Image 1 (cartoon, rainbow, N blue to C red):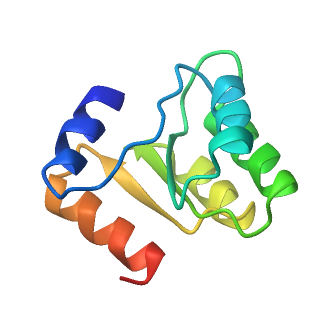
Image 2: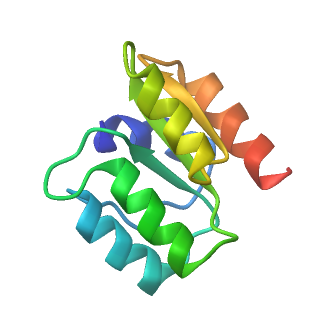
Length: 108
């Protein structure tokens, strides 16, 4: 999924500053890199995307996180939004949807 997102966004000249193999690494990378926006899969090893979202928002309440979910994760999506995610994208998605969602979250 990380590779797919990277490939999609590179077509739009967006800089990818980092990729994390799990939620715990994602939190550490957020603290180090302070990206403008984060795409975070709900299902990840070590620390779930929801747990990582909460940790990132605790560190930086202004963080812009877009959750990526599979069909059937409605409850987790709701909890993500309540925990501070800006929005969510349901897999599978088209690159235009990803790009438009990022633009909306960034206000561009």
